[in-house]
Image 1 (cartoon, helix red, strand yellow):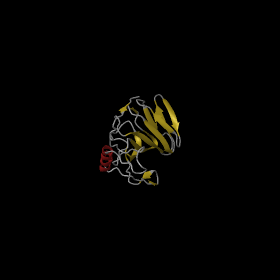
Image 2: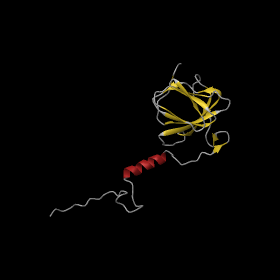
Image 3: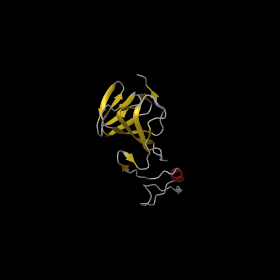
Image 4: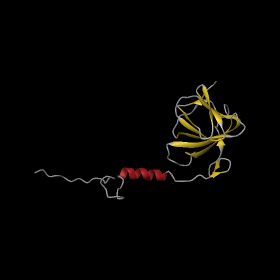
Amino acid sequence: MKKIKKTRQHPSPSNAPSCDWKAPQSLELRVKSSESIKNKNRILRHKENFKWSGVKTEKYKKQDGGWSAISRNILVGNHGETAKFNLRYFEIEPGGYSSLERHKHEHVVVCIRGKGKIRMGKKSYDLNYLDTAYVAPDTAHQLINPYDEPFGFFCIVNAKRDKPKRVIK
């Protein structure tokens, strides 16, 4: 008769009593390293006029040229988070526009204030409240506000991304 050798198994959700499962040591180390980055839960309270507590309004880009009357607020991605994405709020004043650019990363734009236009490739589209645009990698694109009220939108991008390249018309 063959002896069956018992080996110690790490408990898993399928073989541990409810609520008693413990992560293998390697997973516990990952959790501890995330905590050391000061990745904390937080709420950004919306204030009047599309501002958020604890978030400063910044210049659209460090370099001037190719854009006008646009500002940015980084809501997620600049405060020690380990998220693989950034959430930013951009606002374009009447007559303003973003740079015409392309890059290898994709992004999503959600209109939340006023209305505006987005150029993707050779076509231009209207964006109204809660309209959502997906910009595929390597697509020349630009956001424009030809209207008399501010145009504000959330922009979701990968946290790790390539630098945009300006497109000359």
